[in-house]
Length: 209
Image (tube, rainbow, N blue to C red; front, side, top):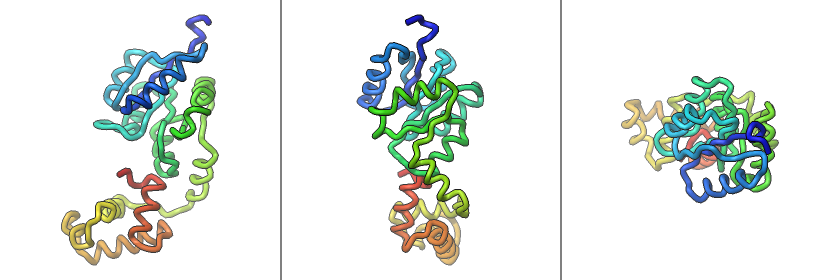
């Protein structure tokens, strides 16, 4: 196949085994090849500048600069960059953040074997790709009240196993204010208690522990 017809891909993931699987699958295709491999967001931006790949596969959870920040940085310099998020999380909040940052595709890692190559071709041809289960979650929560930054701080404290008193001390607010924030969080997440709230927040992508 002529070089001009080959889809040039950059893969960004900090797990060597995952990276090896992705690279092997892509390079096994006749119409695509991996031109760059990065293990964090900073490296991804540097390699994008050098190689200008047609499609970038971006892991979300990475050391130093995470995937969302890397997508923002790349799209700021290269507005037409086509970036597909790779993640283990089916959370609607994380997906919305990724698309707001400039991603055009979202791919769950447990579906890589069946959908990776098809997604690359789809995105390269100018389309977007959102898994049906993610699209459904986004639609379900579209009208929800948003969690505030301060409420997220409180929720993070709860997730770390801290009492209201310790959370209040860390955030330099009163225990009464922490309780009010928790009451609001439970209502917004439709959670029965603080542990349930943390579980929902992790599942939907509010928290990334």
